[in-house]
Image (cartoon, rainbow, N blue to C red; front, side, top):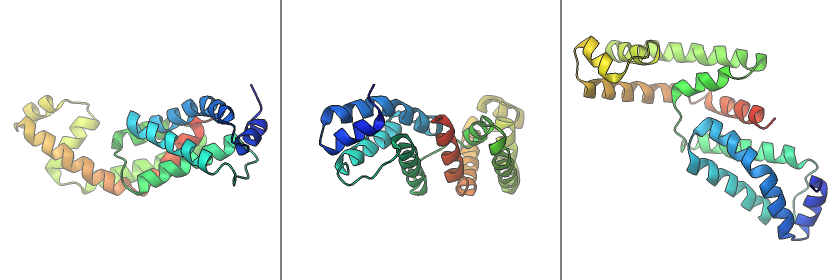
Length: 188
C-alpha cells in the first residue's frame, strides 16, 4: 500500500490509479460511518460519491496534510449539511441507541438528548403520549396497543406518526451533534 502523501501527490498529477486506490481505501469506512446514522443505503452512497467527486475536481487546489483527517471532516460536514437541509429522516429512537454506544465523552450528550426527548414526550397530547409510551417504552406492537386502549390500529399508526414528527422537530437541534459524534467515533 502506498502512503497517503504519495497518493495525494500522484492525485495532484491527475493519476486516476492513485484516485482509485484512495477510493478503495477510504470509501467503505466513510460509507459505514454515514450508514450508522442514516440506515439508508442510497443516501450513504450518494454522500460518499459526492465527497470523492469533489476530491477529484479539487485535486489541484487541495492542501491536505492528513488525508484521513481531511476525509473525516469532509464526510462530517456533508452529513451535517444533509441534516441541516432536513433531507434526512432519522428514527428518534435510533438517536438514543447511537448516543449510548459511545463512551464517557458522550454521556453528557446522551443525558441532554434523553432530557429533551422526555420533555418533548411530556408535551404530546395525552392519548398520543400514551400510545408513544406503550410503543417505545413497553415495546407493544400497534395491534397490542389498539387492543389495550380499545382503538383502531389505524388510530395508533396516526398517533405514532404525529408523535414522531413532533419529536423529530424537537430533536433537530441535537441531530448535528449526534451525527458528528457518531461519524468521528465510527471512523476511529
